[in-house]
Image (cartoon, rainbow, N blue to C red):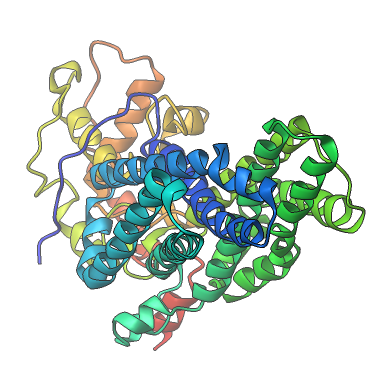
Length: 469
């Protein structure tokens, strides 16, 4: 089958992955709060029905509105996630939908139930009897968690497909090795976010301090699962592939720094919640609660970068590279070149002085710009500015050995040289003329380096074992 090519949009100096990441972090934060907030509403409704008027005021007040806003904005950012990812990773989304379309449909049904129940409570809650109120909030809380359940299986499959790789089918991929640790971890995060936002809202209520303190103590109990997060994180690290674990634990300093940020922020929040709020029963004001919530947002952002980074060089482990090319297709593209079947012209075709540079721009578009820009975020020009021409040729030809979390270069010697010349031209500040290079000896050397690097990813135990067989 021919490699499919998709039209792409440019985001200027913003790396495409950064655009997806920014939308994704906001979406995950809002969605997880909606899940935890819904469960917390159910809990406080039970407390209210036992005779606590302050709990009823909390349920019917500003917190209810925040939960509504959260799941509405969560829905909108979810649509934004689809919109951005299909522009950058259309083939990845297509594979996910092909494999899990019925499970996506199931998740959407639960999400529709969540939206309906949440809005019905917001609109009619004050007029309902206690039993109906409790059932409606219970339905909302359960439906929101079930939405997380189905999404978690599909997203965790991207990193740890498990038995699906050996033909185990949809369920083998869904209940993959990282399914349970990631599901339980996200559930603990959702509960903690719900508790932290509740604490901030309680501080805005027109109540005496002792009554606020009583509500805060109840809300803080909901954050108790944060104590399990270190164990769940270690479980997650234990089940992910060895090379992915290595990226996170020192193999890639940016990823290791994100692990440190997530761990430190979670430790600070957990320490305050467990020791300060639950054990010592301290009062927490709105400013401190807001600070803890900001730390939680930082931990969420770092965690999402970790989840994305751990998949490198894949978007679906063992199946699809971050370039939207499969491992089996790399060998074919080494013969034909990656741009041979690309039907899309360059938007800025006229600005390049010669066809070799235009060729290089199309190579960059096909193989680089999902994760790099030319001069902006993660800009290649800045990364290679001090390299010599031969360093560029060697390091690009042996890309997966230059950086083990990058996929093999899926092109031929002419593609490598065209990309090298594009980068040299950019480094030289885009002069009006530029020589074409096509030395057969030099191209032969590049071809030799490509052959030496092979077409398998570096550091992948999966592919090394397949090669040995």
